[in-house]
Length: 304
Image 1 (spheres, rainbow, N blue to C red):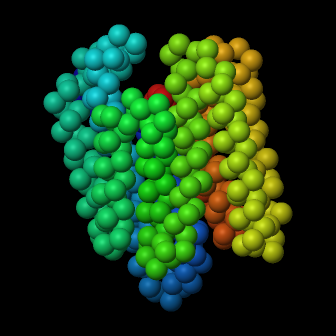
Image 2: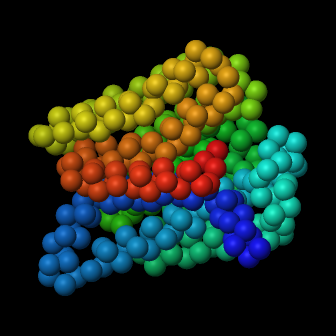
């Protein structure tokens, strides 16, 4: 009984998705040049960057887990009709218990970020605020909803970059990449229950394509070995487009759902490609190691 209760609470946090949030932090470290510094500093005994990686990884676990748990809390009445198997409508988790856990996760995520620096703490507060805004208002807005969800991911990437606060002034625009990508997922996901959203699917495909172009341009500008980005982009395309094309062809909810699931987990591949553009393929491969972990968790826990 105790194990089933713990499992139900874990379901609220979407563990497979939480791993993708960790990839945001790791990519942010790559953009900040922190991985190179970590390797050098480890040799000379200075482990601050490693501690900061731990604190920010814990922070994003709290922020993401708490944010998606509050989403289920806000949707409890709707889920009782459309998804009654979920932890709250099924009665396996009480609404009060879910609120308590989600609140602790968000506050813990913010507290962990402040262990790094004040900028990280401020960004964590912004991410938590964006998540709550989406849960209770943003997702009901036709235009702002996808932007709102994208801002959560933008803040998460910048949270990783904030390990070197001075770089936020010159790298803030990189937050547009996860914003566009996650906004595309959000637009496509609106057909998960009822289907028949071909225009949204085509729009999402176009937004995905813009991410490929943007990452390639970044790699071209940032690295003389920019061609090393191509295998990562090819793998991203392999994961994204076959399920999306099937969803466009059928317009059936089950295939739209599979497309959304593939895109959510492929955030790890997006982050690996972005890290490769700034720090080279070894860091990209390091981040890509998170993908089988996320895929394994996705077999046990829902993604959408």
